[in-house]
Length: 280
Ligand code: A3P
Image 1 (cartoon, rainbow, N blue to C red):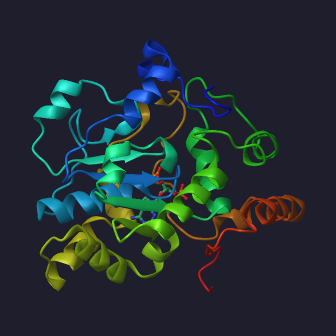
Image 2: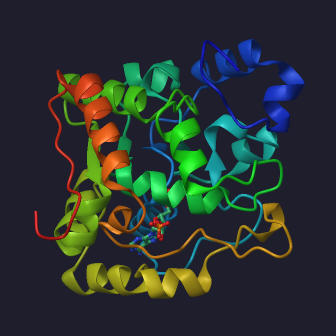
Image 3: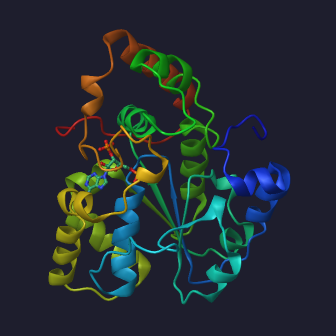
């Protein structure tokens, strides 16, 4: 626990202690062409990481293998290996805006901000955590009460979203906001806009190829599994359904009402709208 928020007990935090660990991240020197992919948990990080990687490398090869396939900002290991990597590098993180590397923000270097509606991300996270070693085995009801209504992980979805919404408002185009639902509904338009933001060359054919290679079906068959942290009898749930609106299969009427009330209370002054179903 650090400043009222909770974080997975990963070795780098435990070794250094949270104070020093998070100070090191804020003081971390990124390169000017590094990309930060800042996402709330379960909002399509692996999907968008793959898309950005293809756009930057101009190749539609999966970037999913090897120890450095993903540079997770909050748990960076082997810093000397990270320094050796040829850029542009993509750092992923679930940290809120206020905990990101300060200089990256001051220099207005690129940030891709990814988010997803709270209801679907809660269902996705529930399944992702099922069977993970060290995580309690919750029923959906227990999970809803204990974590959805009292979310403090990585400072919680509300705080993450409020900080990022404000940051986007104050940015001068160096933060690219991308909603999971928009990417599902208008994949081509959003990937093209992402290519423009990243200032990479692209053709329609190339974008189509990226879409195809990064489709749910193809990624599910190709991306790294999370089996190393899953109990042997459980299945990986990293690529589970990939749809909008699955929350309706999980939320009771009363849970839906409770979360709507909490959402309204937390977000009443925040200028952002999420899509909860295909037809919106
Ligand atoms: P579900 O659990 O709802 O299926 P993250 O990478 O941030 O952990 O997000 C995982 C979620 O993104 C999962 O949601 C996963 O299925 C979804 N996802 C991954 N690739 C996708 C794709 N190509 N199209 C749609 N959803 C995708």
